[in-house]
Image 1 (cartoon, rainbow, N blue to C red):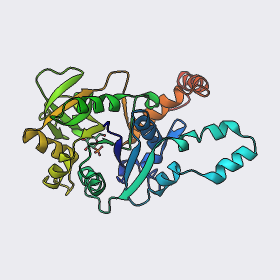
Image 2: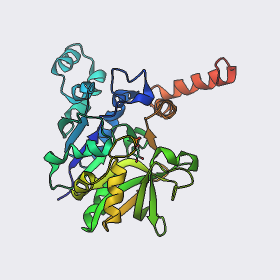
Image 3: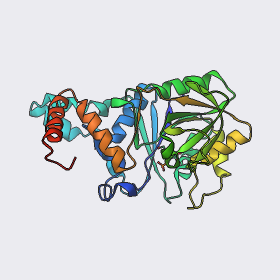
Image 4: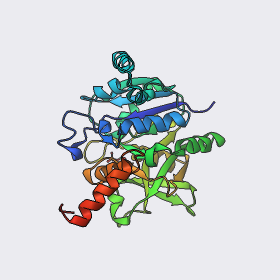
Length: 300
Ligand code: G1P
C-alpha cells in the first residue's frame, strides 16, 4: 500500500529568525500570501499524503489553529459576500487528517522524529521539515517520486532528497557521500551532518524531505547525541547505512529549488521570489523594485 503518512517536525525554536519568531513559529512566517507550513502541507497532500503528524513544541499552537476549520470566519465571509477571501480558505478542506504531538525537550531533529514512534510503530513514512518549501509555490512532486522509488524496492530503507549547494555552504546541511556516480537518483554510501568544507564528500545537501522504513526508529534510539546534546536524524541515517541498509538519494531538479527558511538571508530571498511570482501583485512589485534599484533611493 502506498505511503500516506508524513511526520512534519515544527518544534525548533527558530533562534536565527529572532525577533520575528519570539512568540510565533517560524513555520507560520508568510512567504508571499501563505505561511511556510501551508506550502509544505499542500505539497504533501498533492503527493498522496492523507495523515499528517506534526511534532510541535511550545508556542506552536497557531499551526494547529491554521489547519483547523474556522466556521465563524467562513460564515462571516459568506454573509458579507467576500467570495475571493473565502476561496483563500479552501486549503482548510484538504483531504488530510491532522495529528499533533509535542517534543517536550529540545533534543534535536532526530529526537523529534523519535517522538512519532508510538503512533507510527511499524509503518513506512515520509518526513518533511516544516521550514522548507520545495519548488516555487510548492508544486514539487519529489515526495511522490521518492515514495515510488522506496516502494519499488523492498531493500531500500531510506530515500533522501538532495540539492546541490555552493561548496562554502556545506557546513549548514547534512551532506551525501554517494556510492558511485551521481545521477538524478543515486546510491547513498553515507551522510554526514554539517561537515567542514574539507571534510565534505560532495556538495549534495539534505533537502528536508525523507522516506523511511520503521528501522529508522531503532537507529535513532542507538544514535549518540552530538556535541550540543542533540540527536541528529542524519546520524541515525548514517548508522543505518553503515550497518548495510540500502539508501537512495534523489537530486532535486534545477526547476525545484529548495527554499530554506532557517535564516533571514534565505527567508528574504524566498519572500521576494514568491511575491514576484504572484499573478496579481507580482508585476507591480517588479516595477517597484526596479524603480527603487534604478533611483538608488535605498541602500541596495
Ligand atoms: C536540518 C538537518 C540537516 C538538513 C537541514 C535541511 O538541519 O539536520 O541535515 O540538511 O535540516 O533543512 P537544521 O536546518 O535543522 O540545522
